[in-house]
Each structure stands twice: as structure tokens, then as C-alpha cells.
Image (cartoon, rainbow, N blue to C red):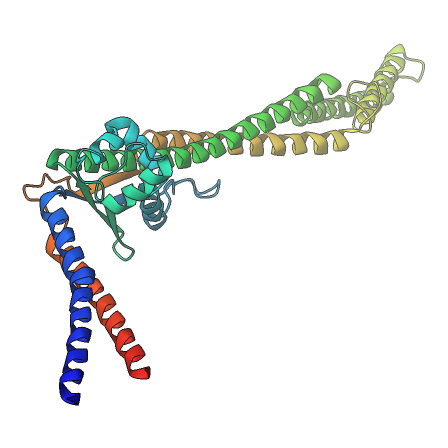
Length: 375
């Protein structure tokens, strides 16, 4: 009688395992299949691909630190866009344009794959990251988006809106870079203008103080006057010598000639003293000191003028570069319009669910057998 009892126990164990298989695997898989094929709404995909194009402009003026490179690296731009697409700001912007809450909650009978319109912005961001797939190739700097929605037109509209927002972001980054460069050039121009004004004011003050337009010209004039006086003195001495040979010492012509020589000597001494004092006759700096100060002022003015011209040219170049777009978004795949729903992948989801539940059932069966064997 022992063998029939063993068969009975074996049949009860197998029946329990079969019941568990039905409850854990068959029923959930059947319910999940019914949901996928009866209630889950189709999702359409729109694809858009783009890259950041950068135009490098080399300035002929490299004096102010390379003003020609107005754009940053395309690599960093692509990294920024990759994060920007998945950010809350992007979600809020697209939501304000297209009402994402409404678009993502269209299938009211599909609570698993649709969005709850009462959800918070954080919930919308999480759902957005489910519906938007970003493929970013760091080597080629290409970004490809796959946007899912419950209608083909909605998917295309969202993809187009994402592309436009990324284009605006790139334009904003370019505007910031151009503004920084223009501001730097403008600051350098303002500094050079102030330097030039100071140099010219110093030159004017020097002329007013010494009442001389050009000390070098004044020296030339003084030198010419001295030469003329020396020539007059030489003539007067010759004339006195001639008179001394033919006239007596009491002759009034000799007295007049001597008086003329004394006056010329006095004038020469007066003119010589000017080279050792202020030419205005008021004392102060001598001509050598004045010339040194004047030449220093000339050097400062010439340097200020050259700096001003260089800064002005650099500023004009910066303005010219700011008038054109140095970065832009180039779409190598424009937003597509789907004809066939690609999501949800019902067979894949159903197969994964069946596999997962079967593994749970298998583990539970092994546990039951292990407990039974210990008894």
C-alpha cells in the first residue's frame, strides 16, 4: 500500500505547483497581454538630428588678445544642449507652447503609458525623459532625438519645438560670447580715448604754462637770432678797426662804433641767458629740461594716438563680427512624420513580463521543494 500513498503525495505537490504557475504566470501574463493589446495606446516616433556648426573668424588685429575667435568649442555646445534637452526648463518651455500635459494624457484608458494631468512638474520631467530619447555621439558631436507621442503630428510638433528651442539656446550662447567680446573691445577703446585726452591735455597745459607752442622751434629761432647777432658783432668790430686806423680816438664815430659793439654784446648775453632759464624771461626750467619734458609729452601723445587707432579698429571688427551669427544649429535630419506606431513594443514587453514572472515562479517552486525535502 506504500506506493499509492507516495503517488498521492506527489500529485498534490504537482497540483500546488500548477496552481502557483497559473496564479503567478498565466493570469498576470494574460491580464498584461489584454492591457497591451486592448487598452495601451499606440505611440508614434518623430526623429530629428542636428549638430552645432561653428564659424571661426580670425581677426587681423591680435593686439587686444585675439578678438577674432568669437565662438566657443562645438564640443561644449553639444554637451550643453544634451543636458538642456532633458532639463526642467525645456519641459516647461515646451509645455507652455504645446500643452504637454494635454498631449501626454490623451489616452484616458491607458493609465500606465499616459501621463496624469494632475502631476507636478517633477512628474512631467520624469515622463518627458521616458518619451524623449537622446542619442549623443561625443566623437562626431551629433545629437539625434526620438520623440514619442500618441499621434504622429504631436510627435513631430514636439520634435520641431525642441529643435527650435535648442537653436534659440545656441543663439543665446553666441550672443553672450559676442557681447563679451564687444564689451571688452569697447572697454579698451574707452581706455585709449581717456589716455589720448590726458596726453593732449598735458600738451596743452605745457604750452600754456611756458607760453611756447614748440620748444624746438623756439630753439631754432633763438639760434638764428644768436647767429645774426654774432654776425652783427663781427661787422661792428671790423668797422671799429677801420675807424681806428683812419680817425683819432676822440672821433665821435669811434665812440658810436664802440657803443654799437657794447649794445650787441649785451643783447648776445641776454639771449644766451635764455638758454639757461625760462625763455619767457620769468626764470624756472631751462631749455634742456623743457625740451626733455616736451619730448616725453610727444612720446605719450603718439603712443596714445596709436593705441586709440588700434582699439578703434579692434572695436569696429568686433562690431562687424557681432552682426553675423558665428554659431548655428544645422539639422541633418528634419523632424519626421511617422506613419506606423513603433511603441509600445507589445511583444517585447509581454515577453519580458512572462520571463520575469516565470523566474519568480521557478524560484518559488525551488523554495517549496527545498522546504519539502528538509521535512
